[in-house]
Length: 62
Image (cartoon, rainbow, N blue to C red):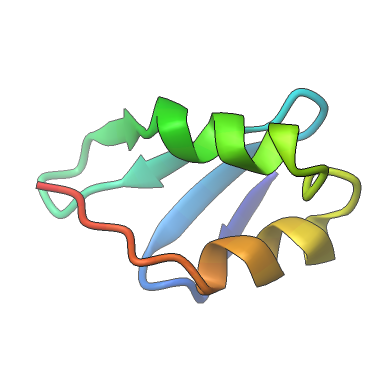
């Protein structure tokens, strides 16, 4: 599943969740610490939960 609107293009795979972030150089990257936090805190139940959690994080990708 692909969503947009969080500052770029993001792919979501739920349960266990993994977020893949599309970078400006047209490659994907992952942030394992973000994935772990989302899964550990139970924010992976719905897409709405994921979007709300991720939108509140300060994510910096080089």
